[in-house]
Amino acid sequence: MSDGPASITFVTSRCRVHGQPEVTITFADGLLVPDSERLLLGHLEESVARGARFSAGQTLALGGQVLRFTARADGTLGLEEQVPAPTEQWIEAVDRSVREVMLQKFICESVGLPLTFPPPRASLLVARCAQDADAVTLTRVDAGDPKADLSGWQLSCAEEHQHDERFVLPVLALSALKPALVPFLALPPGTVVLVTPGPAHVFFEGEQRQPLPGSFLAKRNERAQRS
Image 1 (cartoon, rainbow, N blue to C red):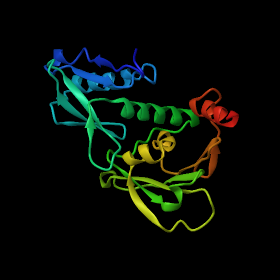
Image 2: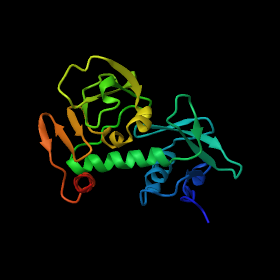
Image 3: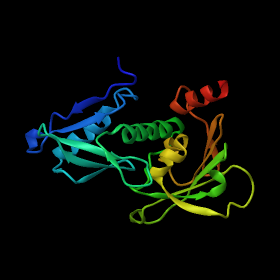
Image 4: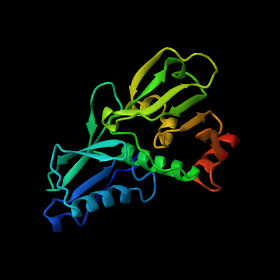
């Protein structure tokens, strides 16, 4: 008997008709977000239908994520994602990337704001006081040129003091440092998010955005209040 969720694979079905090998995607931990495979399968099939061609070693942007194609023994292409680790590591799986994109979509829908993914391989500015803080503030400013790989996000503790000692952190590393913050990273510039062990509060251009009833953020906040 397995001790954890079994891996599951899905394969595109509309790539070969365009002269492109089909693509196999693997969820190593099973499908944690129902129907989330359609996000990536649809993206791949639509890209190929529009003329995109993929090969082993090529990268693919999905929201703010970077995936990499690999050759598989069955003749299809596989997709690898980076592991949040000090050194560059890739695994043939898409769990984290798809889950984070889906959660970011749910958060934006919860407060009626447009999805504004950070650039792939983007970074954010982190105050050292935020590393061990239970309550933190995420603030997004206009980062200017999207080619500069800056997300515009700044992270600090929620205390009122000078957050002077800062360092640059790849957005990917936030998945390991503070994974609870990752779902908020596609909110647009002008957003401030207060994330506490209890409810999270989203402000846009100075006004608080109440989560829509029954939305992902509303349910998250309800669970946090009960715990």
